Image (cartoon, rainbow, N blue to C red; front, side, top):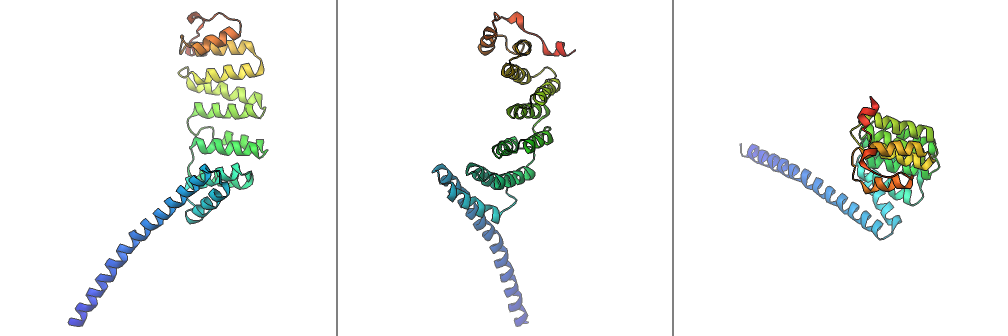
Length: 229
């Protein structure tokens, strides 16, 4: 009876010990990872990209499903000109956290730096619904324009206008900027007049009209919703 009691006591003690070790070890691992990330960011701030790279690599080895670590590693690699490796880690970050616009745009920028415009466009087309239809189309338009795909850029901005249903100024300003970039003053004026509907007292829009040789004023405004009808 005494032997059985001793055995039971030992079993319970071991169980308590094991249960206490689990969370403790987890906390220690978390502290270790936090320390890695702090040191990696500090190294980057100090301009020591090599040290930052090594620390983020170690972090990713320990926790490969940490989207932010994959992202930071990719950013560091891109900054160092290691574009193929950067694209791999930035792609993983986006796969782990779809809809993160910062991840999409950083990956897109890295594709451009790597001279892979078609891959960048595939990314932008494939993620156009992420972050909202309007912003997705504007993003597609902006990146298409940056690599000279002007027809697709204009089409994407036009879709952003349609999706906004006349409730957001951003697509009209984007089209005005696009028009100015390609030297289409007629399209620029039309887009600015629709943008003016949202803020008839805009000094920026007044300056844009003056640059076109047009006297600014609230009467220039066009209601985008009525125009779409």
